[in-house]
Length: 570
Image 1: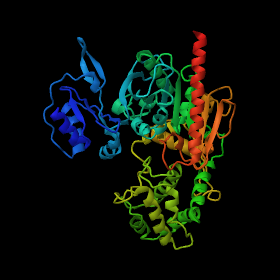
Image 2: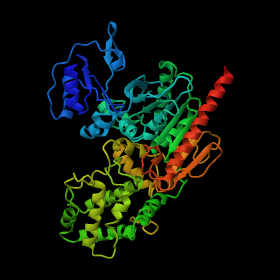
Image 3: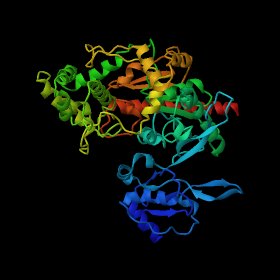
Image 4: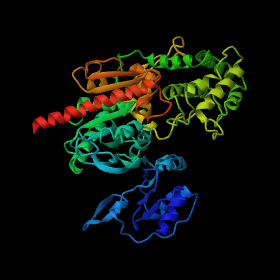
């Protein structure tokens, strides 16, 4: 006991207890106060590696030998590992339990791929077919999912199922506090399913992105089928879950998947909350310029002359870089990690700056956050403090642009330079998403420099298609998603809530008006990208509190209707 207490006190600064199962990679800690939260360590090849990963929390503290096995069930759930001679001794599930007040402190001290913050939950993997729709191969892969049942009740309970999107599921779990906030009220089990080809759910392991042949199974249809088979597996294997209603939830691309999941698998989910889901941001459904117009409106409303300063910066960059020393001066002025050396670097720089403004519009939250980057409250207002005067020299304007960029890339004060190859957290799967946008997820964007603050850029499908073929060896199919999921002709479906923040640029491709009395739109003034799915915060505007209340009311009705229907069947 002293061994365990001392080690966990060192590791987590919280006075918790730890056991390590000899010969296994897993470890378990239990907190003594503040409630419990869990950090799951990625399974490693050997016990010493896992221990060294854990020891990094204590800045290299050495760990004494582990005590003998034989831990009671009360210290953590057990799983049995099958071997040649059948079931072996219970092995502790890969998890850490720590006081919840320590969660953010510990999370910040670990590399994001080494931990998952799952309050009262477990990290698991289940076999899924690589190809659900063909019969040529029976190859499977391990799909990761997170599950928490602290507030789940077999009697009248429900299952909230997060349809994972283009990134590590742990990251999305950490940024979907709404599900944790409503779990007790809905007596809900929480499930966060990782999307194939993202995080650790790689169908071909390290070769998953090798070529288009290996990427051929990265489609929305295959991802939805993964979710469907996972739900059936959970209902089959978890006592008490078989006759419970499942509600799909997701944000952004995950919100699109949640809506499409309800459309394609209505027998598995009783309803869906699709937050910031641009299901209409496709061919001939919304103007290609609507996205950039909303970004511009956000900046224009956040500070005098802010959007105009940005609009004028593009020509200022062009004029400066035409001069002999312009590239060097701009590299120094913007504190770039990699200096600009060639003329083509200028367009790369402009694209990076444009994407920064877009990301700021997406995460313009009313409180400090770290969804894409560590940012202050209402970050666009902070940015616009540096962009009040567009009528200055080119050099002065670009120095102001640097100050504005610095808000996004260096709010923490830790960055020594700005890296134009990165605009967001590495938890997002940029490689997989690039392939998806070159196949199914073809969403046209354009700007004209008049109705928006960006350089004019038309939507050129042939150019886009050629670039996709050059990168991936595939040709995009721009009309497939509307064909597959109905485009704007979706009135035959039921029980889907489409929520959109008014200041979120993705709302331009979202459903913002009720379609029927069961296909509902909730528009949130002052709401950025899936703000309603984030955890309750003291600085939340009243509008998002009302939106969440309305969402819960509808979900309760879906649950009630499910049990009423079940009662009639029996």
